Structure formats: structure tokens, C-alpha cells
Length: 349
Image (cartoon, rainbow, N blue to C red; front, top):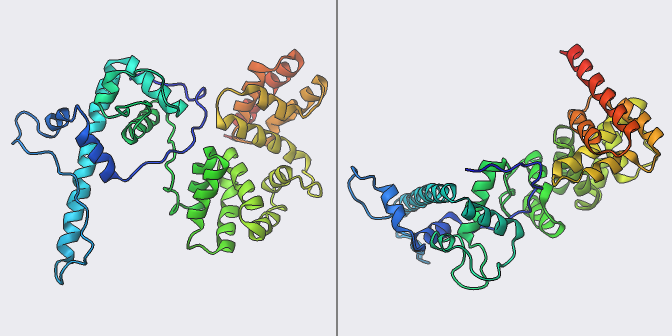
């Protein structure tokens, strides 16, 4: 199946999906569901019916002594749903791999999240991936399959709303990187439910040093504006931390906490790397974040020190400058800094 260059695919916003039972029911209702039976029943195996869709649970409590039986039945239903979805994913992968036109249309519809005017390929409707009437949009099943395909081809795990409630702070920040503001607030509220706000703020603050640049930017923003005074207090407690404190100060506009000379390079790279991490090829934004209004001569001098910051994203940031900066003086400084960075790496190892 065709692969997508994840450098050109920005982080995608979250999607909403129903539970597995609803998705499995959609598979059973798809026009091509007959192909599922062939997968579940190989030619040499005894023929069985498709796992039934789970029925609605009765409102009354089970009679005494039958609770275990009901739990076992529900477990069987969940296993049946998982089996149906796994098999249908194989059907869809095979169809999409055989016809790149279908694959591209599915991905295009997923990325746009907008109704498609006019007809769509009948095969996508037959697979249950597109609604069968206008406006033609991806069904729940279509969103689910497209998410799987993008994860496999581009390596991007698109988040599903409501799935981060039980995550640790680092996983939460990683997942929230692509969330628009309203969805981020909703997901954060779910994560905070049942947590003490001060402890939650401390957990997020404790994760900031070890997460990616964009996750770190998200965490600083949450602590500054999403967790009240508890969050702001946790941020103030980080200001004296080497490097991390300088990033916090830069992102919150704290002019009292000045970076040390060796922190300047680390902060510049971290803030540029957050833009790179989001993706989408916005090289101009990365260059602007480093330039900070300086002229080319000053930028070249700043670029020269980046190799000494020991930031894990330094090489990627320098390559963007080399490939996209319009001034030869700056690109020359970036090439020299990249050579120095590699030399320093050899010494450290």
C-alpha cells in the first residue's frame, strides 16, 4: 500500500468514534459484508455464522447467581466484535491496496472532513466507509478505517476523543498536540475528572522535561491557562530548572527569568522544533521563530551557537534553515553549525 510522507502531513485533529459494538454492527450492515464471512470461515474450516451483533442489555438486574453468566456473555460479545473489526480491516486494506484511486479518495475525505459534492466511488459505499446518501461523508466505519491506514502508512496515531482520560501526563500531552482549543478543553476536563487539581498540575509539570517540544508547549499552555492558580503555581516552580525553566519563561513572557548563555540555543531550538513537530512543511514559520526580527548578520551569529545547545532536535532545525533560508550567510552558518554538531556528537560518544 502506498506510503505517505509524514513530513507533509500535519498532525491531524482528533476524531469521534462510537464503541466497538457499534462499529461491528456497521460492518455487518455493509453491502460487502459477505466477504467478511469468507475471512472468518476459511474454505477448509467448519462454516459458522457471523458473530451476532450484541443485543441491548435488559434494564433489570440479573437474577441472583446469574451475574457471572452475563459477564461471560458480554465478554463473548466483545470478542466477537473485535474479531469482526479485525477481519473487516483486512478486507478494506486489500481493496484499497488494489485500487490506489480508492485509497486516495478515502484519505482526501478524511483530511478534509467535509461532504463531497457529487458521487463517490461505489466501492467505498459498498465497504460501508461512506454514507449511502447525500451529503456523502465518511461513516463512523470510514473514519475508523482511514485512521488505521494513516497510522500504518504515515506513522501518525490520530487521537480519538475521550480516550485520554486514564492516561498519564506525558501521554496526555502527546495526544493533545493536534487538538483545537474546544476539543482540548473537553479532553482535559475528562482527564481531570476524579483528579485533585493540584496533583494534576504537579503531574503535568513533572512530565514537561521528558516530552517532545510540541508536547512541552501544550503542557505549558495548559498549566498557564487551563488549570487555574494551581497550574500557574506549578509553572513558577519550574522557573529555576535548567533549560526547562528558560523555555517556560520564554513561552509565558516572564522577563525576570533570563536564560543563561548556554540555555539560549536550547530555547531557540525547542521553540522552532515545536513548529516542525506539528508538520505541514511550514519552514517559513520555523525560520521566523529563530530570526526574531534580526538581520541576516545577527541571525548567522545566532545560528552559529545552536550546535552547543545539545537539544535532540538541533539537527532537524538546522537542516530546515539550510534548505529554506533565503540568505546565503545564514545557510552557511547553519551548515557550519551542523558540522560542529556532528563533531560534538562523535566526541560525546
